[in-house]
Amino acid sequence: MYEAVYAHPDGDATVSRFAATAARHGYDGLVVRAVDARPDYEALRGEAGVDIVDAAEVVAPHPRNASGAVGNFRPDRTLVVVRGGTNELNRFAVEQARVDVLARPFDGDGDVNHVLAKAARDNGVAVEVNFGPVLRRTGGTRVQHLRKLRKLSRLIDHYDAPHVVSVGAESHLQVRSPRELAAVGEEIGLGGEFVREGLAAWGDVAARNRERMSESFIAPGVKRDGYEEDD
Image (cartoon, rainbow, N blue to C red):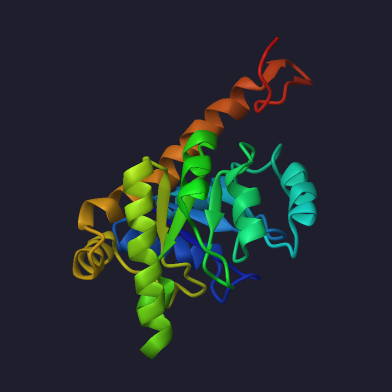
């Protein structure tokens, strides 16, 4: 199982600190969402004893801005994530086969409905089930997010849409173990297995994309776009 985090400079902790924390909590790997920072992942994997996946999370005000960023990151990053939060960005993300994950779909006034759930399934885009607000907010905001997560889990189950689970940690202190998150999932009505599947899905997507990227080199110095079909 994998956790996806915001490491420095996007978050408060370094990749190495996150990796050590993830290993201590029993994770198999760590997805690092970073646009600018790209440390030596190979060296860190050896030191931490967990897989480390390089990802880029695109944060854009409008789909046209996000589209260009996705195109720039897709050839080089193992995972490409688009942060949603508006209905326009949420729809853009799930309709793009180049995108791996729609993150934080409820950040603003965005929502996920049956149309988006079906698009996510058809295009293989995982929708993030973000436990961060459940664990770190209180009062009405927390209650509202819980309601949205329950609705999202029903849509995912009904339409067989892919999903990932994360707490969106910006500090190593915010990381929670898979067992803890599964227990939270049971408590709020999503189910422990749903949570475990979502944590494992990060690794599944990374493995799929690594295979695509390795196959994209058809000859020394000649690279084929792994997201285009052969003639």
